[in-house]
Image (cartoon, rainbow, N blue to C red; front, side, top):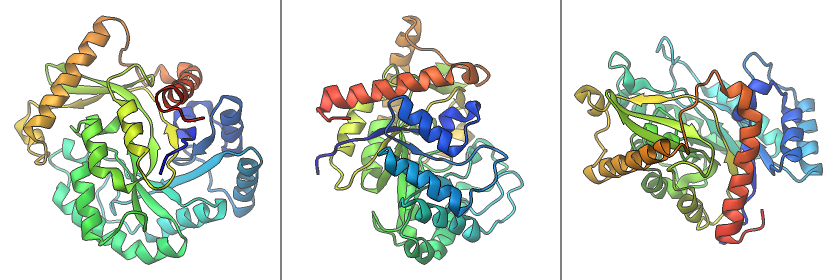
Length: 334
């Protein structure tokens, strides 16, 4: 199926602006975006009632904007204390909200960076617990006709996500899927293109995000940059997405910050048993490309403290850059 991509935003990018959902939609329409993926609400916000959700849906319909929902979780643990946590009712609320606004997509993200601390529960343990929890939610999610889209975040690699789907007996397009964050893959020591190829049949939503990765004395550090300026081959990834048999929206996500992967630590590196030599070499090549871009003054890491001052202007540029990428390279009208 030939894709006609719609380019929008993930509302996380605009969190510093403190916009409630309808105002996020208005901002999107005014700045060239064609929809909003709500990763969640602002910290401290109360959950919207059905009346508000219907108003949000009506605004989206009137302005031909897509809507995707979020706020779900997949690891059945408190990510601070690591105590067991039943996610069924939490995810059912998210599924009901998604059903109310008429979307099948519910993004799921539990936090992550677990394997950065060897004192945390093992990845093997969390994989099994996650699969058990998601199997129990299958019928509930299907009853609400939603797909729980697990973000490629800092919890599991694409290899591990595929194992979860297998343990759940899931099929693509059924009740589990992937929110493909194109830059986060670097943080999990994966080449964004190869990882996208691995997980492609499961992708139902996206975070289109560019970035860089650079060597330092502790290992590798990854960071987001303005779309189209970094080393993530967004063109190739969008080309892959064109081959899907259903429409996928391109939701821009951007933010500040840096993420250290201490790959010189053998204990840390052992937490990535699926990392092969060829992919590690590719990461090294991307690090060299990043170094050249930094030396040329094209990109640089951005502190999270600075993000609130620049987020609006940069997200506007991000939207325009992704629209241009799709339009010029693939001839889609976006």
